[in-house]
Length: 372
Ligand SMILES: *Cc1c(COP(=O)(O)O)cnc(C)c1O
Image (cartoon, rainbow, N blue to C red):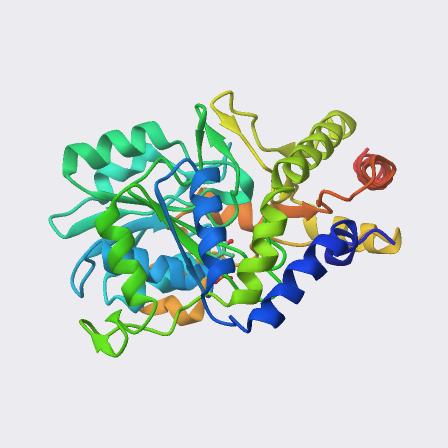
């Protein structure tokens, strides 16, 4: 059996360090925020090449607070993509602002900057590109358009810890950036977690207060805030794991290179490798109209897969009132129907990558046979 992810393997590889850090939290009883969270915030800001990081209790909370700090209010508009995890769009709705969706570039599966200008109105306040699958969106044209229209750029970097765009770390490119530390992400907590990073001290201060009920000093509440605080345990675990993240991302990059080589002549579509991008391969997607059959075939060979994501946000029933319909985002809809995520995690062996690739090759040959 080759699992899709293996959280246990990662825990065992750093068990002594993690257990010691958790024991310190138990000893100090700093269960919410505290020293471990502060130390992680400082380390993570450094890692992201930003001045500030504010730890919160999920990536969704990070997005919500980044949008509030950017001043989003009911009636405003934020441009993002439909081809993302639903949280990107949910967070916009929490502020009362309207999510305006655009299609992706099928070669990268990230926001197509050529569609932005047409989506901008007098109400547009921000653009939220999503660094999907571990690769940054094409940020230069997005930033250029944002500057020209005076819009705030919020990176959804929930899948891109350590990714680089033209030598700059994901998180350091826009005005604010949001990360998730959900257990399966490249940097994962032992529970929920998230962070906002920024170079703007005012944003960091506002977000630091909003995550803690708008508190400036104990029991002084300057705004209606939220209980979005990061737990001490998560800060401790993340602090340990951050020291290993570059090694883990390097392993993912090796697996991705092996997949690319082994799958080159199968006829499956892979994402383009962009010279501007250093991907951290949160997900390794392949694309085929035979997706559902390939899933079944791989299951019989003991290979687990995922689909990220089978239903784009504009087709979700909970988001019907946005007014979009089938056909509005052709590249998004096509990618959703064809995408399949292969096993991808640092501890994956090169034998496993070969086995998965062999099973895929076997499937592709069968398909070619039946079409002859
Ligand atoms: C995981 C994820 C989120 C949400 O993060 P949570 O920690 O699960 O709240 C947001 N956006 C994207 C693109 C994600 O992958």
